[in-house]
Image 1 (tube, helix red, strand yellow):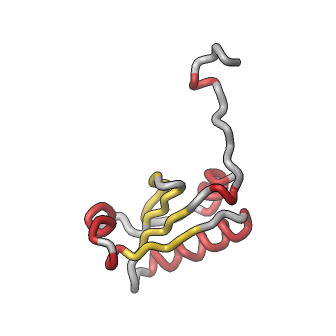
Image 2: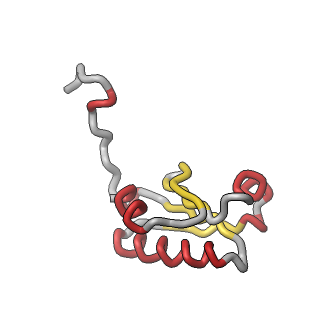
Length: 94
């Protein structure tokens, strides 16, 4: 397997507790509230830590994501924005 090309090798999976989901949101955003419900449920069931970040308190996040909120990051990489699909999030974390 060592001489296989990288596209045929499976990446080592990380334990759920070693992952981090970040929900970038703002107050008064109904899509953000919906996203948080999904993130809380999936992360709670899988034992994955998660954190909310408010774009109104972070100018860099605001500049980067203000047109896309809510935004979900997994381990710092953008997973999705606007609407969070529970099955897709669960699959990405499993």
